[in-house]
Amino acid sequence: MARPKPWHVDDELWAVVEPLLPKVERWVRYPGRKRHPDRLVFQGILFVLHTGIAWEHLPQELGFGSGMTCWRRLAEWTEAGVWPRLHQALLAELRAANALDFSRAAVDGPHPGVKGGPKTGRSPVDQGRTGSKHHLITDATGIPLAVTLSGGNRNDVTQLIPLLEAVPPVRGKRGRPRRRPDVVLGDRGYDHDKYRRLVWALGVKPVIARRGTEHGSGLGIQRWVVERAFAHLHGFRRLRIRWEIRDDIHEAFLALGCALICWRRLVSLP
Image 1 (tube, rainbow, N blue to C red):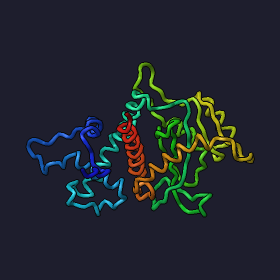
Image 2 (cartoon, rainbow, N blue to C red):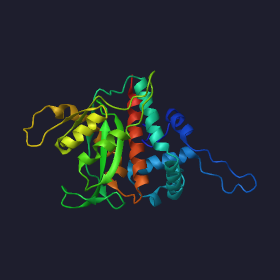
Image 3 (cartoon, one colour):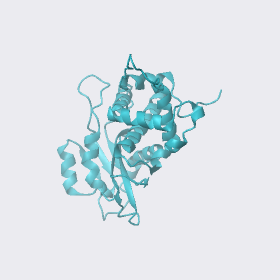
Image 4 (tube, one colour):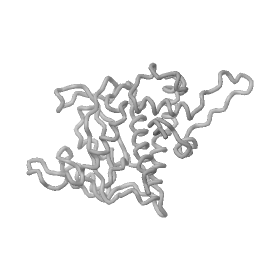
């Protein structure tokens, strides 16, 4: 049996996605052209995310609708807040399955390539090239909890608090939703006493490597999970280079990528 394509949406995933989509009623008197099915359009969006293909080159024979139809539906669903809610729902499923570990979190912020957009800036470490940064926080096992976007000229440490605050409240168990990890791990790029105090103020213990000290602290043994998560996230070709001018569309792809990583982990559970 042939392995399904990564952009194929099975019934189980669609059962999670469909209730989050805004309902659009057709006009009775002047209904106009019938709206292309949401499930097929969602697969078209996933096709672009996985392959990195330009919208206008989306193959019509796949039946996903035109590239413009998929882009408009992506913008519509982004405005409705679908992708963060999808990510949050899947995190709750993972927590209910005891597959989410808040005992510690890890953060990192590498540079993707960039073609344009407001949240860009000249990188101080990449020969002054204009770029954006993806900032990611994962749980202890590498499940993405939140991702943010900034200009390439922003220091990683300035995005530490926004990243922690971007973690949604995660249900899945009785009692209050879980939002904060017990500990956050960071490399020397996050070394600043001011931000250590701010992290403590959120009720999180910062474990961050100090500049000017020898390597070999052992943090890398625990932080590799966020680097692996970035490898998975940038495995989606649309995220390797930022093609979107609009920040919200690129951020939509980031949130959708995180949600799909969570879904893969969920379906792989015994």
